[in-house]
Amino acid sequence: MTLVIDIYKLVVILKLSIIENKIYDIKILFLFTFSFLMLSCNYFEKTSDKVSFYSTISNSDKIRIRPKKLNQNEVVRDDSCFENTKKYQVDDVKEIENFEKLFENSEYTAYCCCPDTNFAIDFYKESQKIETYFADTIKYEDKVQIFEKSFQFSFVIDKKKWKSYLTEIVNK
Image (cartoon, rainbow, N blue to C red; front, side):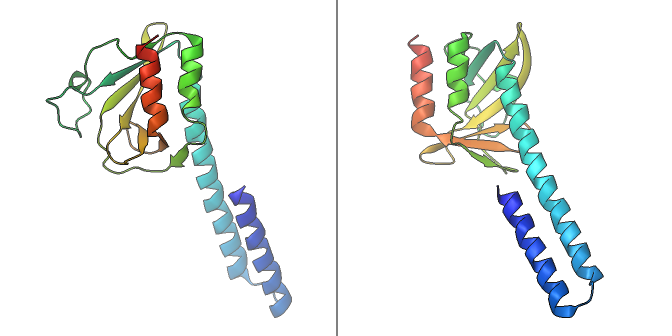
């Protein structure tokens, strides 16, 4: 929606410039084109990230959330730094859908620098790990940041919903 509004603003500016100057200013056309391309790239990148994330969830038949071992540095994301437990494991379609619901009304963020890592979230399809995301439960007091391994994007979700979900799958 913001992309459409931004494009509309640029069109209005371009029209006003042409009317006022009665001359077709190549600089304004260049600015308009460049701005449109930049806005479009940003919009499609966000959309691509979201599709990738939700596709990972929907293609999974098992999700395993592994807490970080107590003696490990928060920044290290090596597989051996996380507990090898099935405590937070779901393989029921309904529970996977409930995981996806955690991201309703979430905040999408672009590059996220230097998050802590408290949980690894592994997605499986037919016993094969297809993707791992990570969770930072420390950065925000009332939110959890779920991010992908190269930090290119993340989702910020409500911490109460996160804790409730973990309690729900432990008590299943």
